[in-house]
Image 1 (tube, each protein chain N blue to C red):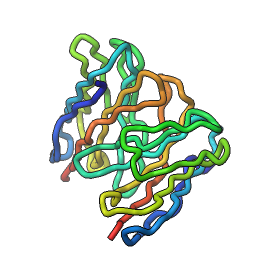
Image 2 (spheres, rainbow over the protein chains, first blue to last red):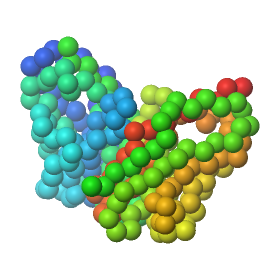
Image 3 (spheres, rainbow over the protein chains, first blue to last red):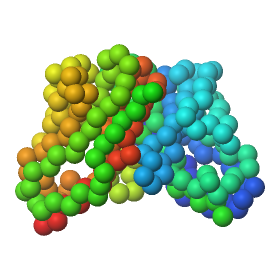
Image 4 (cartoon, each protein chain N blue to C red):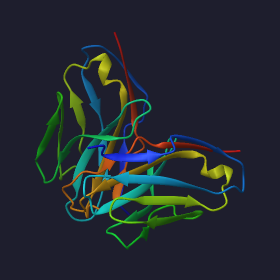
Length: 113
Length: 111
């Protein structure tokens, strides 16, 4: 039982390049999330998927796209990276009940030059 | 709108000292409240939670009580250890889909 896995762990991009962050969970959770973590700002929700086939914008969706490939996998794409997207990205999953916790992956540290 | 405000860090304590990290929230309805911990280089993991007023969450010697009248969920530990050094996040949710996180409080415990 690996929990939530993310790839890659580290990535350096040049401005304008594109890339996809991958996330997978093996806990049969319905909901999956993408957050970014910036110093002094806590975690901010980028997108979430309440179930397979659905996605919704969070607090900071601009510059990102997501795909819920199947129940296990939820990817985050940066089409044209900008320095403002330098951050640590976390994927999480949960059963979408108000009493349930979210389980987080180890994060991807992205630097955009 | 919904939000979480937690104590600014960093916090530095000596081993065996008493810890309090303050957290207050703004939310509609009756949210569930959480404390998460993040160790260096890792993702967040649940430390404890409380799902209704007056509930006390506890784990690994940490405690927090859901105080609806003061909209607070302060984290406490009677005797901290070096291994407790981490960043602590307070969070709440009404729906299970939209979580609101505080900015995090960094704790360093020195021997």
